[in-house]
Image (cartoon, rainbow, N blue to C red; front, side, top):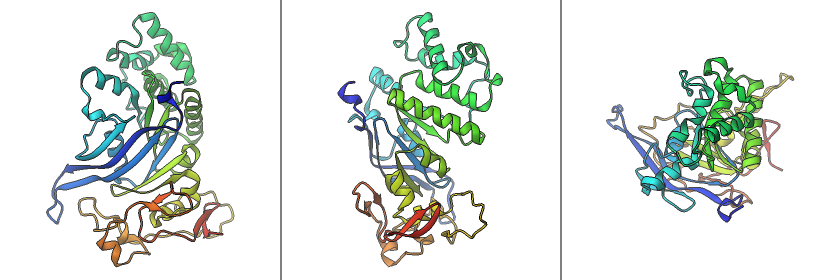
Length: 345
């Protein structure tokens, strides 16, 4: 193993990235939607970073920026110290091989006019140097199919002949075809049945253990994120408001929004007892007209005058300096035990 592939080393570093879109004017006359507003993030080699938040918070825009499908207005994205937006020609082509994506809908993400083998082999049309002969490509397709739990004979079938879970396995095989360093998974199991979800999640875990690939796992399903992620980043209206290890963020949330999010996660409760939940008041603000200062202040029970005047900065909110919360008044006495809120010991 070379030094650049050492587990735990920073792979992707995002610093103060902003991204704005021009849209139809809001009632206030604003037509600039800031989807990302000062994003700071690190993805380490061999880890799974869970990215969670409500719809419209900017998760997919961040994913598209990491894929270089969107160019940030400001800030920096570095891949092992290199700015991919500054690459050209062969260097850019080589970089694109290293970052791949698995999409949410396994039915829409595969070409119905191609066979499974053709879909998996399609990336090699652009990256011709990986497998130069037809025999090498065929052998690699069969290896990838076996790796994701399918049979080599499935290479000749069309997507319509597979179930949803099998189609997502083909999508994973296609992402692995270029031997990437990081795979962005955008809601990869949300369209699948629960039993199939578990199979695909176990497959992703096995592949990570075997290949050392990093995942950016985007999901609104907190139970899934808790199962697969090493670290979690919580987004709200274009900002990352809390980051930390999965255990710390889920069991000892420091940001009020994170605590409300965790308390609202569905739980199997056969007792019928009333759960201790945080019920947020008010509507989610429009990203066209976000609140001043702290974005969450209009729904936060801890908000004070400073929250409207000053945007909080991420600061350690506990004993672990790597557990950061962007809040003027982080929670200090609230924990989540067995899915319910309780005072911390």
